[in-house]
Image (cartoon, rainbow, N blue to C red; front, side, top):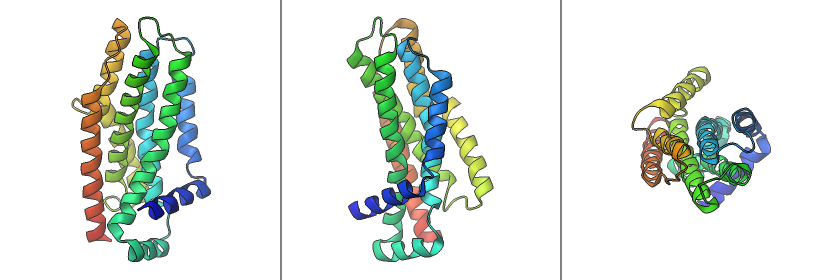
Length: 216
């Protein structure tokens, strides 16, 4: 699996297709987060913006190989393992970028009433919940479920929007915790939302890998 992850990571970095979602995330933060604003509200926006970016990056990792190369890797390592490596790679890069963003926002935000450790912990958990939810959206709106690029992109945008606003979504739960905390200056780490997002991402990955083995 390590070799597959190195291969997927190298393929993603060399293709430079990661630049578009990364620039989108930077644009989100540049418009929505201001230096000196209440830290918990800023962290909520930082985490929420990570969801569509992660979904997009996962979709990129699922579609960046030519069919011939995909078949060679599937024959050598197994189609399900190759697909899982693409999902993990697509979620890992946004998670890393999101963690850096959380640390930067915590350092520059207004932490009155909230300790740096509490703000960082809450922000990292919320970012992870949104990242995992975005990974689930990307897994369910790309190969092998939606093959047409246009429909796949439309499904990704719609799925990301629904994941941010639907009651019961781990991402929405994490954002609600941060927004409520910003009003009361109380950091409430969204452990439950993070656990729910982990289960959702695992289920989506298992479903996607199994469908890949059967449909491709």
